[in-house]
Amino acid sequence: MKELISAVVVVSILLFSVSTVFTAGGSEIEELQRWIHEHGFKYNVAENWIMKLPPVNRAVICGYKPSLPPVTPLPAGVDFHIIE
Image (cartoon, rainbow, N blue to C red):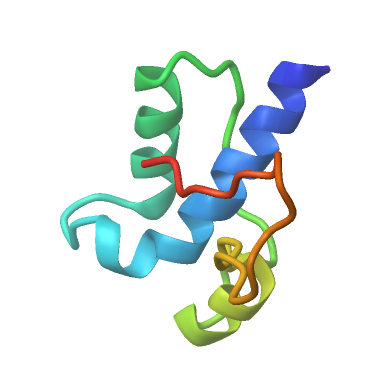
C-alpha cells in the first residue's frame, strides 16, 4: 500500500513538471515509464485526462507546494528546518 501511495505521489509530481523535464524526442508516457522503472517503482503509466491538459492547468492540479518556514518564533523543543 505504501508503494502505491508513493508511486501516485511521484507520478503527480512528475506530471506537474513534465513540460520542462522531458525532451521533445520521446513521448511523455514513455519518459514517465522509464523514470518510474529507473527509480524502482512498479507502476504502469497510461494516458489519462490530466496528461491532455495544458501545462498551466496541470500545475494547478498536480502542483507541489512545499511548506514555508514559520515567521514567528517556535516554542522551545520544536524545530523546523528544510531537508534537501
